[in-house]
Image 1 (cartoon, rainbow, N blue to C red):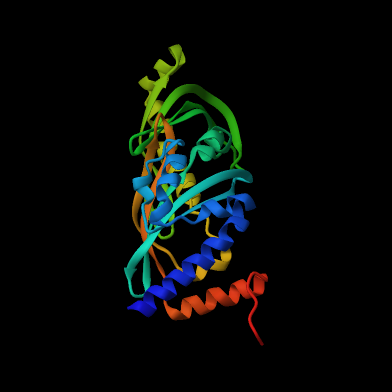
Image 2 (image 1 turned 180 degrees about the horizontal axis):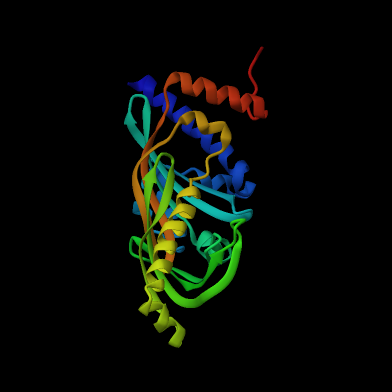
Length: 284
């Protein structure tokens, strides 16, 4: 058992010593690792950001900042993690992701064509994203145009168009090593006389179905994965539970709980990767 703990302690110290150079500034290195003895100082620093330290509590703590591209737009993520022993070959991982960078860029990422078929074109404009408890509220509008299809399957004559204000509620759940968002509900408010006509002919429901279907497809194809340096992919983290969480007031975050492999074979592979990076030197 003592040998197992030594292996885990060795792996954690090596991992945390390298992680800051993979995503955050070098001067953050001294703050990346925290044992229980000095966790109080870290707690006050993290709490000032509105994040509850209990969501990532552990014997060792880490902070990692990295940019991840979504629709070719760089989005900053900050992950606060806590690690502790789970079994002789696995570490328990608790992590909290600060997604306020994604929240800020969401209108830019999500605004655009939602559907462009020959008989229906829907353009989505997102104005604001707000976290509420364990859900995320997305406010914006949808502009729909209904056309007749040409023989070559291109849009033809337009026979109706309408703009509706939209409020969608989304949640995230753990799938594999990522958080996948899904739309829980959509509330549409047609504008003016044309909006009333679209209600009368059932076109509002068609817009609603399109937002649920196409918006859901986009979110499913663009999960949010906690950034992990490629050198440590061998740790094979398994996330068991988690979802979106509000960072007061209205800020978007996410909590995940899982574990990572720290068997002797894994440690050897990590050390070999660090050697290739030039971080560690071994005697030949």
